[in-house]
Length: 313
Length: 274
Image (cartoon, rainbow over all chains, first blue to last red; front, top):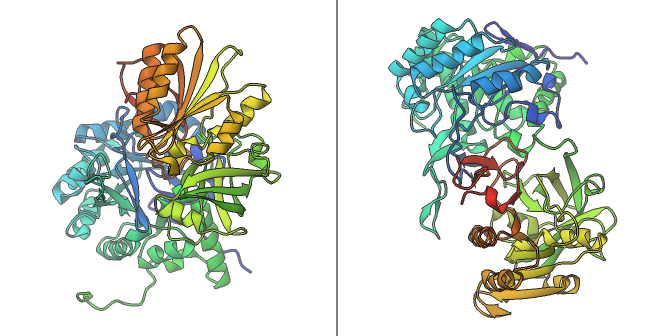
């Protein structure tokens, strides 16, 4: 049986296989070394990095919901300087693409982090987090509006040579407009989706479960929504799309790839099974091999022609 | 970071014993990890193929040798059926596979030296880490006194077991259905008052309001107190950042959020910024 070719390229970034880990679900990567080799993955995306350490939101921060979970962590992270000094040197010893997720409260903060990453060795790409639903300033505020997203993308594009991915929020009326804005300002790829804003209420205590009131919904519950958005966006832009949302298995990843994603990110599944992303990559290899598909690239967007405009559901 | 000996493994249920009144004792084989595991460390446990997404954290209750009838190489966890995760666990029969991650977190350390009198304070199902701890103490030739409280007599699992193993077990219930009516803080206050010249080391596990009250009394009396904390958590090995508690290096100092799963679940009382 022929070993299938799993390699893909997101612009200039070459990946061994199309499976990365999603920001906020994989720490700084090193936490997973007891469970897997990072070289088994196409790449990892770090926890969102801000110019200075962030304390995050008060607890309770998470709750399980049907087929998913809500989180309101508030981007607790060690800050870009500590990442560059304490994590990156160990991380870049591993043969995998390191994508640094960047978060700021202002345009200047995004630029500051991008510049520091640009000067560092071992970072394959930057993913701009313009879509975090759990912080007061920054994040989703920029990602909810095409003009703001364009401004942030442009500012970062001017200050870094690194490939720039823009991670999109699904909490918008038409995600294609945001994707087009990112593309027009020089983004090398878009990744989608971040979490959907949701809320859970403890009826006995008559109060919201999360201290932050609302949180971001992830997990299998959002997968059909995310697949649909991946399909829409991949037909609206010509830059590569990185798809994510509730991927637990290789079959789930294939849905995103067939919808038009060149690569995928595994998120919540990492909490349930620390080897989940490796299992997805190995499952993809098996699936392709069993069906005689020579390269995963043959499957990207490989659906029959769609009706001109899908009707109302 | 997860400790280097942490393992993610599948183990069949050996026994799942209904202790009555919603309390259960689950036994499974954990030969490799049981040796290295310490009392108050925990497992993340899930059942494959269920529609419960996340594993749930459970303190190790019994390590090899803790319970006389425990199977060789097996460990036990004590749980109370409260939500979807524990309901699922209670439905499992012997032979059903469990997805287990562990050992996780920081466990109890016995007091250094031999002078301190050891007092265990448990609130209901918060008694879970104490059987393994008592067994470990026993191996060092030490015993403990226990204050064991709950809302009612129904919520005091393993009470007889504790009575055999402790110098004394003082029981309190909110409704007065067993022991003294009231909270564990009642007997604790008396003990702190009477033991003015005796060095105490408190170990507490139970609901947050209880831990907060116990911690406050311990700090006011200058008594060493270790808390075994509980929090909702998604991963158990330090990456989701869902299970944090506010902490400070010194009371009144700057507050940070630390993970119950990695920096805890056992923390010194003065470290938690309630």
